[in-house]
Each structure stands twice: as structure tokens, then as C-alpha cells.
Amino acid sequence: MTSIAQKTEVLIQALPYIQRYEQKTFVIKYGGAAMIDDELKQSFAQDVTLLKKIGINIVIVHGGGKEVTELSSRLGIQSTFIDGQRYTDDATMEIVQMVLAGKTNKEIVARINQMGGGAVGLSGIDADLLRVKKYSEGNTDLGWVGEVTSVNSDYLNLMLRNGLMPVVAPVGVGVEGHSYNINADIAAANIAEALQAEKLVYLSDVKGVMDGEALVPTILEEEAMSFVERGVISGGMIPKVRSAFAALQSGVNKVHMIDGRVPHSLLLEIFTDEGVGTELVHGKKS
Image (cartoon, rainbow, N blue to C red; front, top):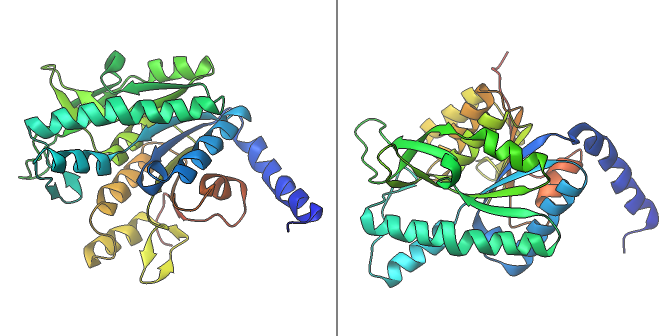
């Protein structure tokens, strides 16, 4: 059993972090098991509500790819991934919008609001929050997948100033009015850049950046790109890492990758000296 002295030490250790981050903005990409397991859903809702109650502005961008894949399978639609991103045809786009902007978004909002978090559910279509163009990198065609061209940061800041917690489904709209699927990691990075966030936190099913069996506690861009070339970083981690460093270069202070399968990992990463994941930092090896 934890002693009174140990409990006191935890609170004292958290104090300077609480003072440092008051009135700062954190953008949290929420995905993986933390969105599926009931206990982890509960701990996430508690964590973000606590952060908000102590004066930190919270914006959540959620995934939901597993539910999209499951519903697609039930409807006989095959899911295809290219470099960690979902190929999105017309039928898949309908499922993405229905699942992410509908069912998943509202479930997250309801759970946070049970804790008193003041969450508001949005998609990138609302108030032109996420304007996009068709994804075009090299010769890769991902269908109705969009790159963010602008973020309506005024809309988000208005909500934050009024004590609300935006919960954003990564669906945007193009100039022609068509809906686009957006990689949630990249959408979170774009929003963090637009808000000049103190922290961008990726909550997923990995401990962080792993080199074999070893967790890499801190990584620079040069090292990360070397890991991509060697295949140490692969699949869905590639767009996550690339978007993280793009965010750092655009003014986000720090990026964290943490394991959402660990209850309250968000609080452990932010309020303890050791942290629990990988911190991505801007700079070069000396």
C-alpha cells in the first residue's frame, strides 16, 4: 500500500509542472486500446478532465481506424493501407464519416462530460475547422484522403477561452465541398501547429520509439529519419514521426509518444520527472 509520504511526494513532484503548464495548450491525439478498453476509456476521460481543471487548455483529436476497419469488413469492403495510411474510396469515406464524426466522437464526448470535462464534439467540417486538398505525395493515390491546408484556430481558441474542450474527428472538407479522410496523427500535428501548442501528445498502442527491445526516451529528427530508413520505425509510426517533427519545426514546444495501454499514462508523462514514453525534440546532434 502506498504510504502517506509516497503520496505526498507524488503531489509535490507534480507542483512545478502544474505551475509551468497553467494556461498552456496541449493537443492530444487519442487512439489505440485507450479508445477500446472500458477501463482505459475511463482513465483517459479522468486524465483530460483533471488537466483541464488545473488550468491547461486541452484539444483532443481522435482516431477510430479499428472501428472503421471492422464496419468495412462487415459490409464487405476491403481495407487497404499504403505507408500506414488508409486508402479511402467513396464507400470507405461514407463509413469514415459515419464512424468518426458520429458514433466514436460522441462516445468520447459523453464519457468526458460524465467527469465534468466540458467537452464539445466537432469534425473538421464544422466552421471550416480543417480545410484540405487531396493528398499528393509522389505518385501515391490514397483516394479521398486529404492534406490540411488551413486550420480555423480562431474557432478553437474561442472554445478554449470559454472553458470548453474541443474533441475533433479527423474529417475535413475540400474547396469543392467534398469530405476527406485525414490521418489523425497528421491532423493533430496541424492543429498543434496552428495553436502553437506547448505539447503535442500521441497516445497509442506503442511504448514510444523502440530500438529493438529498448525504449528510446528522447530522439532527434536526424536519428528518427535514420530509424525510418533502417525499418526500425515503420508502418503507422512513419506518418506519426514525420508529423511530429513538422510540428516541432512550426513552433510546437515538445512532442510525446506514450503508451495508452498504461492507465493514466498521460498524467505520468506530464507530471513525473521520468515520464513513460519517447520525447521528440527539435535540434541536431552536436
